[in-house]
Amino acid sequence: MDKPQVFRGFAPIIGDNPRFLILGTFPSPISRDKGEYYAHPRNQFWRIIYGVFDIPFGGESYECKQSILTESGIALWDVIAECEAESALDSTIRHPVYNTDLPEFIAEHGIRRVFFNGNNAYTFYKRGIGNIEKNVLPSTSPAHAAMRFEEKLRRWKQNLREL
Image (cartoon, rainbow, N blue to C red):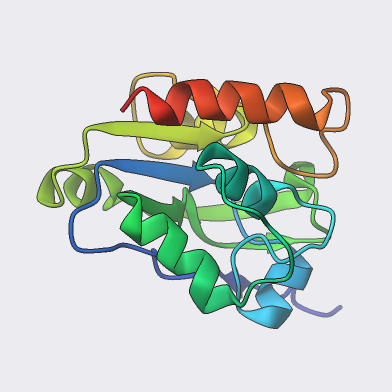
């Protein structure tokens, strides 16, 4: 019997002066293959980030996408550092190893507010790291198709622009 493969997540994206942090759960297989956060073509994360700041979106490089985050005071990371996962669905995550240094990371960088990209990221944080204010934004995952893009964008914009 083959030993299940353990996958590692990514380092955080962080600029010089982050005001807030967006936490996802864990990179999808496509993201891991490309070495980029939210690389699945149907994931709406980058389209929403650009929309929050009223910047036209269309095929930008990963470096450009990262710059939009860091120049806007946004840090990006995942709750899980490594795990076994059968697919892109969070429900297939097994044996998660959490980024337990997240509370120190938040304090060290003076991050004022943490947002979760969907309920699963928040649930994993509470389960593996501890209590934190529940600031859950609609998931940008293609698996979360029950909400229209325009409504997701409105909610993300409302929360991120308040800061």
